[in-house]
Image (tube, rainbow, N blue to C red; front, side, top):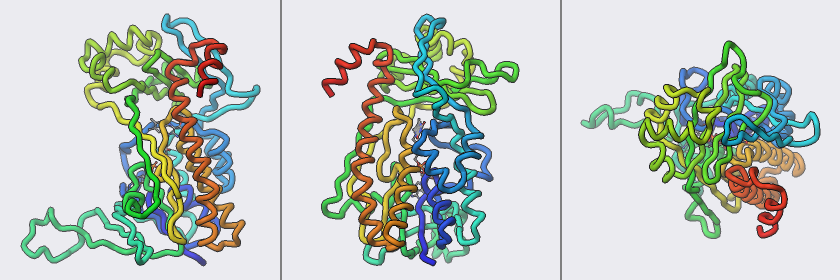
Length: 396
Ligand code: FAD
């Protein structure tokens, strides 16, 4: 059977492992973090994510759709909260019954790792950092980051000891090591590799609304939105009846209006009065003392395939701003499209690798642009009437 080595066991790397486990390939996954299934707290991005049709179709192909969807909370509409804290408007996502699903990121990632590991041909190497690609030899260069084994210290302090680099060879290499991909970085010197990166002026902070007497504090089956011009608040329900609440605002706004306890509390009270009550003063204060706003980056590159055996997938190929809720979904679709392309080419890796990039780059760029465009909409446009909306959009 052919072999595949995957960089990163995040959402896209873990799903790829499921796809190739199913095909019976030999799969090795190298992940920088510890095994998240053994960790108490997992640091990282958004606690929950909106799973849409794109992502569901990919999960379906590995037999996980039903299980994952049942672990989430369906959302049938956007519920826009007005500034008075009492009135709302509802914007259905589709026809009656159509919905997206709020899913817990960690749980989703853990389920996919466990599913892939059921196959005896799949091995996860946690605490292994991918350093680069050796493109002469077409190998992934990896280093174990756990306590070094007994390497002669030659007079160096123990803390300076490092494990040796390992060169991993496989028929196929999939780079799923996220927005700051080490694999992509090591490809930068390749002629005609296009790359662009943009940090938007907004950052985000995540907060939490607890269950109220074991009940959801707000209506659960909607995507809650508080659009306020250049900043916005969103909330997605979790299965445990809590809500993950995220504020997106320009870094200048965080600095100007949310850098002291007094300021941040009056900012929330004035702009999101209903959410403010449920979040509570203590929680808002504690969160803003503990965490800094996180940046948001949009990345495009082309091609997504290199040599005859390397593919960039997920955020490594197309990190996007989260306002279209499609980063993970698009990454999941990458896995499905690549799996189908391999089948189309009768498992001829070199042909499938080249064909994949041709199929995928334009689609990835389009979703990336749509995400940027929805950034404008979520901030403000949902509060305008459809005439103004159309007028604005006609110019785009
Ligand atoms: P990641 O999830 O970043 O995983 C990369 C993995 O690679 C990680 O496990 C990391 O530890 C590992 N890694 C990194 N470097 C190395 C290395 N050198 N060696 C080994 N391992 C390495 N998407 C949606 O579809 N719906 C949403 O609702 C949504 N909401 C979002 C909200 C926010 C606030 C943000 C920031 C993003 C959101 N996204 C959403 C986007 C989504 O989070 C990403 O698109 C998705 O996580 C991409 O998955 P990935 O596996 O490509 O990258």
